[in-house]
Image 1 (cartoon, rainbow, N blue to C red):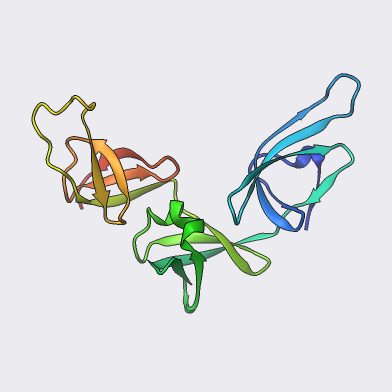
Image 2: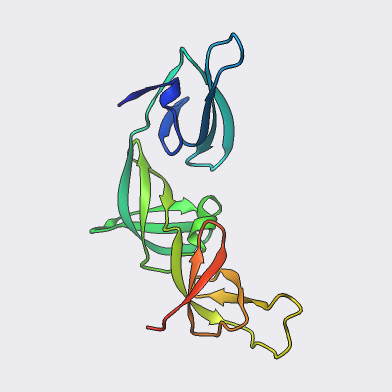
Length: 191
């Protein structure tokens, strides 16, 4: 386990802060007049998603978190739990509370492959691709002259999520969606 000094706590590293795993969202080392340098960071708790601001001083250091990655398959969501199985070992099944992973699971369909982050032999969160391709299952028809709203409509995807798309998107189309912002990116060629 690597020990990071205050100035090595940089963006995208995962640290073990107070016995919990945190991802560094941003860091800024600065010096105020005659004082010693300080690293002002924004940390995101990997389990709860809560963001905190912590300042690390020159004499402080923290251990880098030992995070392992596990290839898994999304199975289903039922009764407030989202279930996954380890790839190559379907007997190793585990779940996350739906409210903890809903923002990510809403873009998944059964048998979708995702990476799960494991901390101290316990699955803590999942990482999904930034962009996913999903089929449109429900799309209201485009009405001629209906551009007062900017030419957009709300469609439902095969995962159950809804996204705002241009009027030319129809039921059965394959669309690419940004999972971080929840925005439509482009229409894909039909398979």
